[in-house]
Image (cartoon, rainbow, N blue to C red; front, side, top):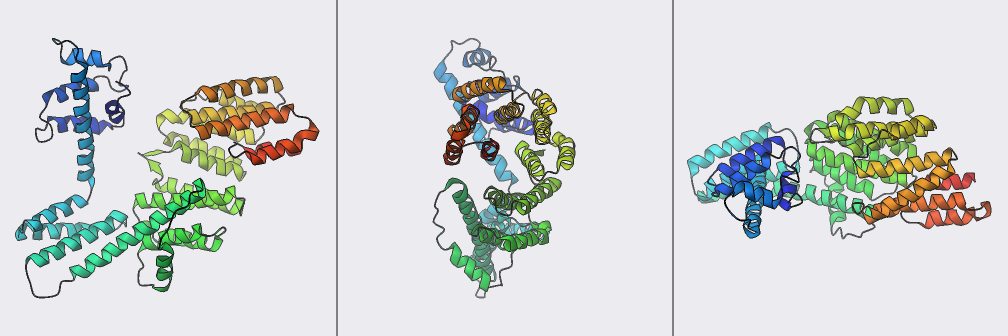
Length: 469
């Protein structure tokens, strides 16, 4: 039962959502089955860990129906009804959080030809939109919906005069479409680069050319996303990238946090791609680091109020690659507490190990690796990889071969690791084993194999030690 769709969904609930879902189930409008309430209350008694022993079907059934013989069909129905209620609750909660909820109410009032009611709602929504400084895609859609409903209201009145809302509907629909079109196109170009997939961009190029000629559309999100689109079309767009940075800074205060997150990640991904392609490495590494730090300082790169361990790790990798060791150590100490509690200790020790490894202080690096508890599979993989490199650098060949064997078995047996990730680390271990075992005259063959292997971790380090040999 612990792996059921219901429990997996409930595990994502925040503290306030447990309380609100209980209230949701208690409402006869949403739920008329009292056994669902009793079932949910019992589940809450197993918090915070949602114990496997307490959540077996037979145990739960006995608690809910003490005088009945276990009926698996009845239990499955109960779980399914509760799951459907939980899904409906999430939808209702999302609807309540959207500013568009008022637009839908207004549209219904207009459809019912309730002019006095509609007038009050028009004023309320218009006032809220005027007070909204931040630009987001939903903002433009809300403006379109308001103008469209206003036009419908005007038509209901059968007045023989012009209505400006028709133009407003069309203009806001254009803005909503153009922002989405560029955003989707940016994502297509981004995925093409990562997954070697070909997307049909249809007429995005025509729209881009039109916007370059027609300067009348000066909405911040269109300007920024079209600029991101432009830099992604070019291999080394330093001037265009500098222009993008100017736009981001100019419109920083009027862009919503969620849009900033998307925009910064597109810019970061572009920088990362240039670094991987060895194009202006120091320039793009510095720019990428600055983008991360800007997003961290403003906290729009945070997830559920916590700094992502991967963002944390990427910042540290950039700092280390730029050889800003003192700064990187200070960053680790200042920010590891911003991560979710479950990641804090592992993130701190793993990244300090990486720092000391780069400084060639292998003894301290190993002492930090020993403190990593491997609560996350990727920390485990990266820590093993780093330890292999330390054994090699220290010429501890027996320990190296032993770890390669154990690491290879772990990679092959762990079903939670994806095939690509498994192959990436497995190939690294295999190639390192070949480097150590091979003779000097066969090193060129190993170099060729490293270059030809599609998935391999730390390719540059393997090539470097081959060159040294």
